[in-house]
Image (cartoon, rainbow, N blue to C red; front, side, top):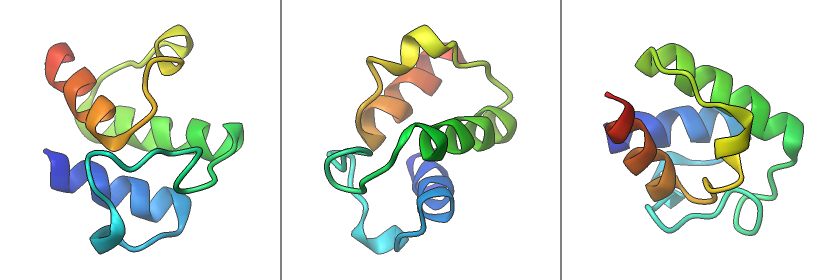
Length: 74
């Protein structure tokens, strides 16, 4: 699942998959703004058939956070 998350993040935020780790931060490391994050979340929701409420996004700051969050939902 982590590799698929990395692919979606790389595509959404215009970066290389190989440069991403579980510790990669969306804002600090990748410079993502709220629109970038919104598009990325939509792609993640579609791929994994989950719903990520806006309130929960405040706690999701890294790729590892996304992985753990989606695993809890499934």
